[in-house]
Length: 460
Ligand SMILES: *Cc1c(COP(=O)(O)O)cnc(C)c1O
Figure 1 (cartoon, rainbow, N blue to C red):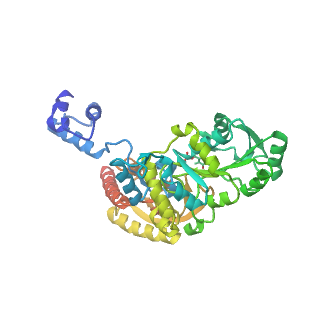
Figure 2 (figure 1 turned 180 degrees about the vertical axis):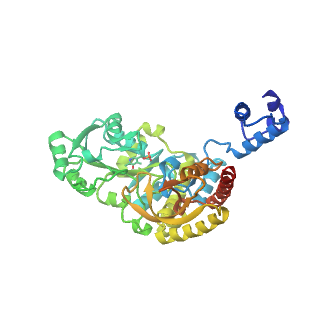
Figure 3 (figure 1 turned 45 degrees about the vertical axis):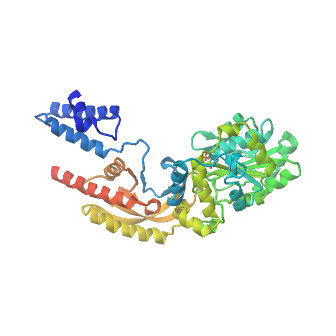
C-alpha cells in the first residue's frame, strides 16, 4: 500500500483526494487478495501493472459526487434527477453572474443598497397580471411564508381532499401548524361544496381560505371540489383572504404546449385569489425557486417578515429565472428554448422519428443486441399534472445473452450514468428527455454493452 501511494504517477493524480486514492488502492488490493484466495489468480502482478490498473480505474470513475446523468426515462420533471434541466442560454447566464460580482443587492442608479427582490418582479407581473411578486428559495418556503405572514393565529379553512403530502416531507397539515395557522378542515376527501366554506366562515370564524393543488395524485369518480373562483366569491362577502398553492404552472396558455391540463397563474389571479404561489423548477422550467404573486399590500407584508431572510433566493437561481421569464414573454420562443416546455410539447410523431433515428445509431454501435421501438406513455413527473400522459415512443433493448436488469445496471453504473426503465424484459430509452450530448454517451455505452455481450458469450 505505501509503496503504491508513493509512486509518482499515483501520488500526482489530481482528480481524487488522498483518501479517495487510498480507497482505490485498498479496493484493488482487496480484490487481488480475494482472487488469489479463491484460486482465480496464481500470481501477484508486478507493481507497474498494479499501478496501471489503479490509474485506469481512477480514470473511469467520475471524481464528483454530484454528476451529470442521462435521463432516458421519459419522465420530464424527474424529482430524483434534479427536475427541470436548463437550456444553454440560462446555463450561460448562471456562469456569467457566477464568475464575478453583480448588482444582487445594489441599486446602480442610486449608488446604494438595493433589493434582491427587484430583479424579476416587473417581469413576473407583466407575465401574470399580478400587482406584485417576490421569489424565495423554493415553493415549500413560499407556502410557509405565505401562511406565516397572512394566516398566523387565524382560522384557515382547507378542503379535506387537499390535505396532501407532497414529496415525502411536505405535509400540508404540518406546514400549517408550524406556520402558526389554525387548521379548519372542511368537506370530505372526495367532495367539498361551497357551503362547506361558507359554514367554516360563519360557524368556525375562518378568515382565510386555502386551496392546495393536489399535484401528485388525482381522485376520480364521485368527486366535487370548489374552484378558486367560487372560493373568492364566498370570501369577498366576508373580507376573507383566498390563498392558493398551485404548485406547478405555466406562465402562458397551455395550448402553446399542446396540453389540455395545467393551471395558469394569470387565470388563478383573475379568478380572485389574493396570493398564488408555485415552483420555479416544475412546469416553469427554471431553477429551484418559490414564486409568490398577488395583491401588493400582501406581498409587501411577506417581504417584511423576518422569515424571508432565511428563505431568500440565491443569485444563481435569479440569473436563470430572469432569462426564463424573458423567454416566456414570447410563448413560441419559450417552447423552443426552455427544455422542459420543449420536451412536454414533443408530439408522438416527433418522438417516433427520434426513436427510429436512435434505434439505427445504437444498432450500429451494438449489433449483437435486439433493438427496436415501442410506443410509450411518457410522464410529466415532478408532481405536475397527475394523470396526464404524454404519447411517446422509445427505443427498446434486449439480448439473449444478458438480462434486461443487467443491461439497465450496466447503463446506470457508468461514469456518466444512463437512467432507463425496464418494461417487459426490455430496457426502454425515451428520446423525449434526452439533452444535448446525451446521444454520444448512449453510443459509447452501447459499444461497451457490445463488449460485455462478447465477453459473456466467450465465457459460455
Ligand atoms: C411541488 C409542490 C410544492 C413544493 O414545491 P418545491 O418547489 O418543491 O419546494 C408545494 N405545493 C405543491 C402543491 C407542489 O406541487
